[in-house]
Image (cartoon, rainbow, N blue to C red):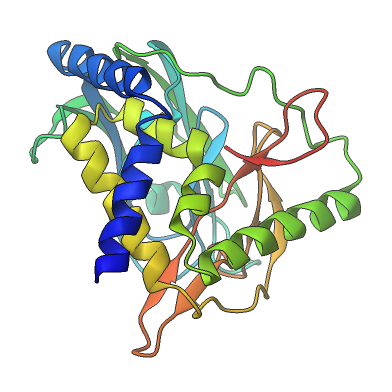
Length: 291
């Protein structure tokens, strides 16, 4: 117990910076965000199909299982700055020989909402995403919508990242597997501090875009530390995977046959913990890093 407390204290000290000034900068930044009462955006979807939701070129949600999927998904971590954002929906039938009809698409629901600082539902409607009509049955349906996000922050996006579309896919797969294996070993060792360092840019993007104050940051980092420690010694072999490049061409990851991450642990009680890992590579760099 004492070791766990000490580890969490170390992690919190590390996450807030290497010195007191950095800690104060983070605190000041989050106070400013809260004063601006920033909006948090969501997509709500109700679908019964093989679908993919794409937001600003990032494959946000994928599903190929049969059954209705009804859920909300945060958009802010993929909103880099205020202005026009793009949401797309791609639908395919579950069966290869099946076609999508106009009547089938009438059962699809996808809408964009916002809340003030993550308040509880009901949220405020931004846009009801009406699906375009189709004249005849089709194999794949794709539609897109835009909306203007009003956020007070500005984050570094993928402007300086390389495209993977023109890369040797076999060599890229080897590099991605190597990165996944390294992260798997970090988690399997229960090294929460190193895990946080590897995911530093990713977690900072979430902290800023979701307007976490200092207390919320501590809670967020504590939960990550506990999760990694709970997976110590329980990480499963990386298997059943394929290379997946996001529609923007600049993000890459491994997905299993269900479209989920192959990076997960199963503890001695059978409880499963999954770990997402999306990678990019800066222009002029040779190494992949967590986005």
